Length: 145
Image (cartoon, rainbow, N blue to C red; front, side, top):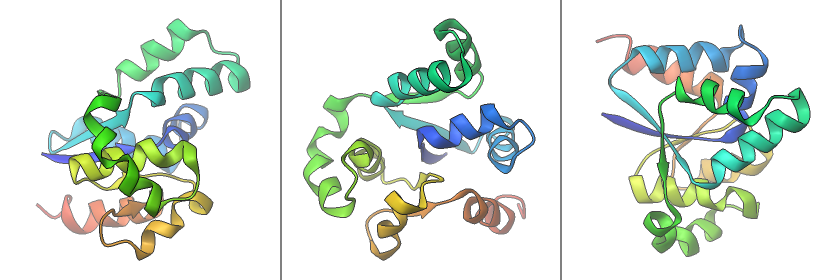
């Protein structure tokens, strides 16, 4: 099983644009038993807030949509030992839990936020994929099997 920490903006993009690359990648992940999505506990509040505010979705609708993506929640208690290290790798404080989860799981992060996550390109501790890079990774490593 390949763990992958997913950022809120990926799910928002996939819901907003059902024909976009994020949705295509999520559909591939859903159909592939080798890959499992994870997110910190704050992910759910953030995605519900964004979809309610920007797309006028009700919380029940958001929860129903999210259930199809099979994202496993990582509690703060689990990733808390990695918070200090995560803070040293990323500047934006709201993204620290995502990096801490990646460190806890020894997993890459999938985010579309270049400004916040580009600093991880220099890190040897956490791999960061934007959608294009993740798509290329899947083509080279998963689809060849």
